[in-house]
Image (cartoon, rainbow, N blue to C red; front, side, top):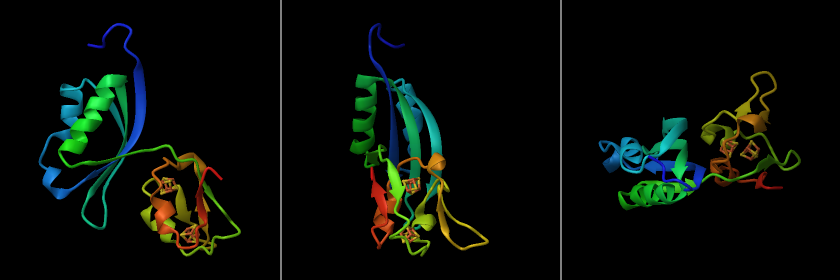
Length: 142
Ligand code: SF4
Ligand code: SF4
């Protein structure tokens, strides 16, 4: 039950689950112990065999903080999503590297032109594309 007057916040986070955490009821614990509501935006296994989950956590500000501390204590990587991503069309060579890591399909290869298209509406701000682009064509808050 939420405390009266407690501030309710929503935080979008990207979680990396190393293999040793896969058998733990992590997301369930966020709800049962910290009373957080979550909305899973994306879940997948990455090529280096980590579980990747992008979710929005909603709850009392203090509980959200405690829940994130709990995740980090058990070895789950936590990063906040905040990025306002832009693709610089002048720098982009359409190599496709960013599209291969984009979990939401915001960056994708057009099947007819083979150009990499950025659909900002689908972007969840995880920033995975930033590190994937060798041409520095993906920018945060351009
Ligand atoms: S990785 Fe960079 S250069 Fe390659 S398609 Fe994506 S934005 Fe363009
Ligand atoms: S930040 Fe980049 S990789 Fe992440 S969803 Fe947006 S476009 Fe895709």
